[in-house]
Length: 177
Image 1 (cartoon, rainbow, N blue to C red):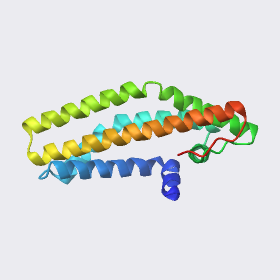
Image 2 (image 1 turned 180 degrees about the vertical axis):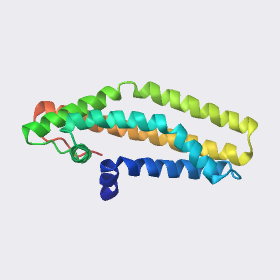
Image 3 (image 1 turned 60 degrees about the vertical axis):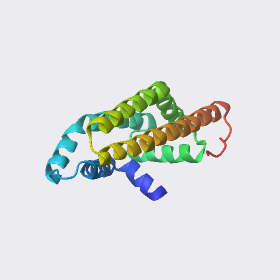
Image 4 (image 1 turned 60 degrees about the horizontal axis):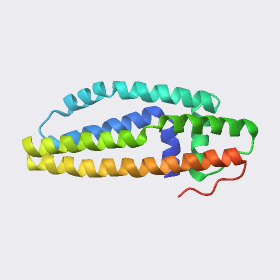
């Protein structure tokens, strides 16, 4: 799994292609009978904004980590394992990366609430106006997606806070859970 994670961290195009394939598959599953080509085109066009946001974020992280996707991937792997870098320049890069990510996460609770309300509303509307298959599909998607986002957000936030404290104290961080 680490090999896949590192590959995706180094190659943004693979993340985008995988995301597009999953989104197209989900749309075709929930709304059968649509043309695959039209679903791919619509999904790709509506993903342009998300790709721009991800590219901007990636550029800022690369600047903080020393200018390369490889450096960001290495720092991210160290962050996941709870390894505090020993070299002063690596410590500074890790500190900058952790600071950026914590700043981005400052409104995570509000964002998770809005996400839950948005997905719950869409699920409710689908139950009122769609087929049973669509309503059940959206309900499963809502519970799974919002639940996973909440779990993952808490886990990442805990890792970042642990690393921030370790960098401040200058001692190794405990292994992440």
